[in-house]
Amino acid sequence: MSATLIDGKAFAARVRAQVAEHVTRLKADHGITPGLAVVLVGEDPASQVYVRSKGKQTTEVGMKSVEHKLDVDTSEADLLAIVDQLNKDPEIHGILVQLPLPKHLDEDLVINSIAPEKDVDGFHISNVGLLGTGQKSMVPCTPLGCLMMLRDYHGSLSGMDAVVVGRSNIVGKPMAQLLLGDSCTVTIAHSRTKDLADVVRRADIVVAAVGRPEMVPGDWIKPGATVIDVGINRLDAPEKGEGKTRLVGDVDFDSCAAVAGAITPVPGGVGPMTIACLLANTVTACCRANG
Ligand code: GUN
Image (tube, rainbow, N blue to C red; front, side):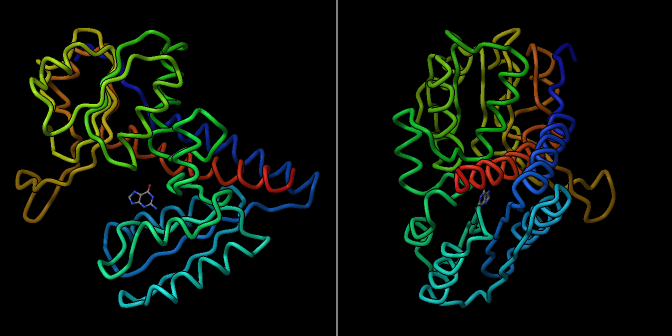
């Protein structure tokens, strides 16, 4: 491997330490404790792990954590009533409704019922529009974490060719907006892109967010490029023992690391930055709410 490892785990620990410091000051100087509410509907195992981790880290940085765990058959009206109650609660500054929601619930309707200033996920249509027009908004946590790592590693991103592979509302599209905001020349590639390998090969920065294990091989990477791997895919790993699994990203780590200038590992890259940015967004929301 010749690439520099971008250590998201260590970076996230630094971000959390800064958040904790900020929380201490808000309490001491203004008597305010930032509060984050997480709403989980149903029992999706991956969502349960994320929600537990969010709650734990929220408390660890000194913020108030509220969790609403609702039955899988919760009605839309009941869910909207809980969001409404959180919107009105002055002790809650950030609200996150864990996705995906069960099929009978309208995700767009629920997300857009969150007060935009408390939408720490940055998924509300107002925040999407504000980000798209370069105005002050809540920025989605995963792309924000990627941008922070890229800025930390490169300093300025101005003029760099960036290719985002994946066009999801949660990662691909906001990532492209953020890179554009930092004056990159941005291409969004996806499953229907023609000559995907050639498109990726032009990039100084590759952000892979497609949700397909090890899809990007090393020979798609321009020598010296920076590779940010957003994928978290669980594969069977019989070599580790019966029923064992291993986590892999959307890029083939070994072959990409042999060519890239810098790369984020999975696990320990983008993943830890996502929750750190959620905590940072909650402090931002709290500060904005309190002038
Ligand atoms: N499910 C997977 N990632 C996310 C996220 O960043 N926010 C929410 N609300 N749900 C998710």
